[in-house]
Length: 124
Image (cartoon, rainbow, N blue to C red; front, side, top):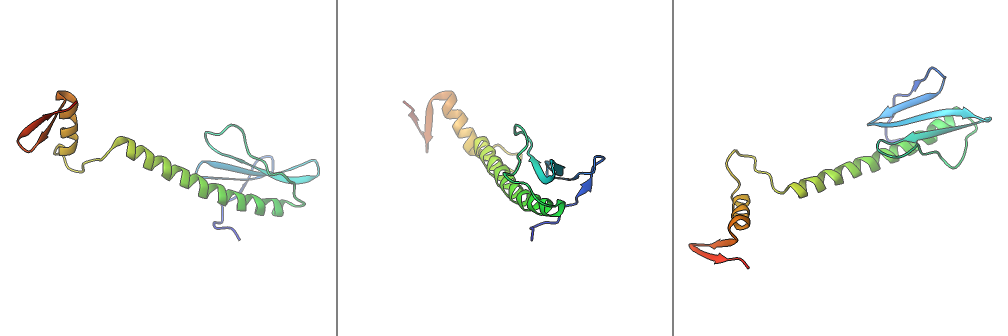
C-alpha cells in the first residue's frame, strides 16, 4: 500500500504518468516488458529501476512505492536546505525596530571595539 494515491493520467502515446511536487514519473512498455522512470528537478537524467515488470499494474505499483520514497527524501532535502539558508541569513527580527545584536556586530566590525557596560574594550 502506498502512502498517497497519485492522480495518474494517460499520455497521447498511451503511457501512464504523474507529476507530483515537480517530480515526474512515467510507466511505459518496451521490448515486451513494463518499466518506469522517475525524473527529479535539477538532476541529470531520469532514474530507471534495475528490473522490468510483467504488467502495467505491477510496474505502476512499483513506481508509486518508489515515488513515495523519493517524495519523502525530496521533502527532507528541501527542509534541510531551507534550514541551512535560514542559518546563513542569521536571526531575523519580526519588528521594524533594528535588531540590537545585529547593530552591535556591525559596530564591532566598523570600529573594532566592543562595548562592555560603559567601558570600551578595543578588539585585537
